[in-house]
Length: 207
Image 1: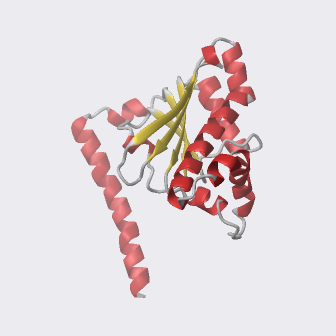
Image 2: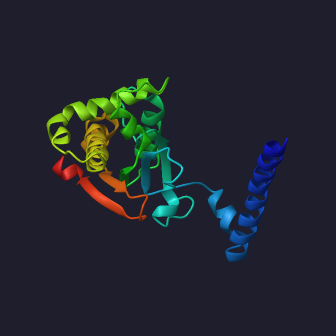
Image 3: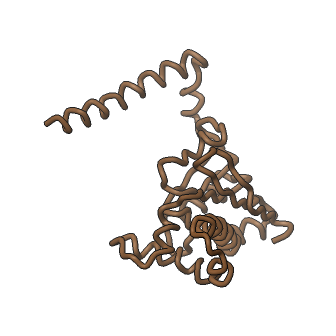
């Protein structure tokens, strides 16, 4: 009963927080929500990890309406993932975003799981795709003896692999063939200090 009471209190606080947030936004700009309701034209598609410590808008100081977001375990770009592909196609073909950012983060649970031989249940099917990235870079990664340093490098290599997979996607190829954007970017976020590190950028002119 005590736990239920605590959880109910937390849940109710979320609703109260929403009301406070609305009031704050309206005090700053009375047209804030009416403007958002007219539609969206975000310049950025963010493909990030589902980790709760990596809120897309917040870490780059973006407002609502500026970032179209897709998140999954370990920020993967998998060509059979219709959820990701649908978001990508909508963002590129309809919203005409200028930038697609794949943002990973150090201490990523999905990446750490892919480094182990343990079974984690249903998510194993997803982690297999991350294991492929390790296999592609096995010589470099196995050459790093410090496990923390190895995991950090694995995170970086995974991001760069996902950007490369984006480049190969039909959606991006089609957009580039028509002379359209977007540019593709690979970032890694450090949860320990809040900073973003740019790993790679690919423009249509150097694809």
